[in-house]
Length: 261
Image (cartoon, rainbow, N blue to C red; front, side, top):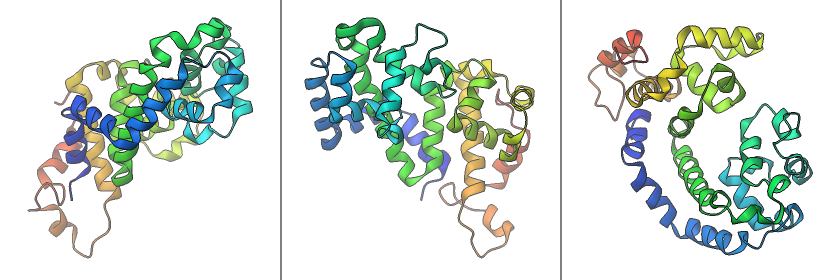
């Protein structure tokens, strides 16, 4: 069985191929074709919410499948739009809602909302990415988290955005050795703790990002490997990559910085 790091690298090393393979899967292609055939017919929020197949497809594309049942909540977000800084969507800590409303901006564009690429192929691309990540997560949640972090990294502007997203926060806490219990602290103190250990600007550098995700996947593997009836020395020394993490990697992790030095 591949390690978390190896599984992540296998998918991320040729993301275009991984996405093409996912998009070509019969179930994904069928759902995507059905969505594209209907989305241009959606002219209002009422149309959108009443077409359950289109609506649920869009919700999954933006990582909101778990909230698909809450149509009254989503209606409130869509009706308020994002142009008013005090709108409902803008008031929510989770950035996924704002991204969803920005794409399906009926409050601003009305009947022409669905003519834009972002509501058509753009949403399909997001759906495929989401499906790839969910599929990876069925085998290894650490791989899903790494893929998600890689996708979102370029848009992370500061530690507060990390704190607002549970998945991003999980990656950062694991990679930096920050106990989850710090979540009970004041938000500014949590942000300061992250800022002291991570330069968010480094996430824009592909090499530094990969070094960071290698650290995360390696430490995630250590934290989540099934317990085995053997001494630590037997587990950690002399094992192939697929079976465990070598002592040299463990020692390097102690000093690994985001820049890879």
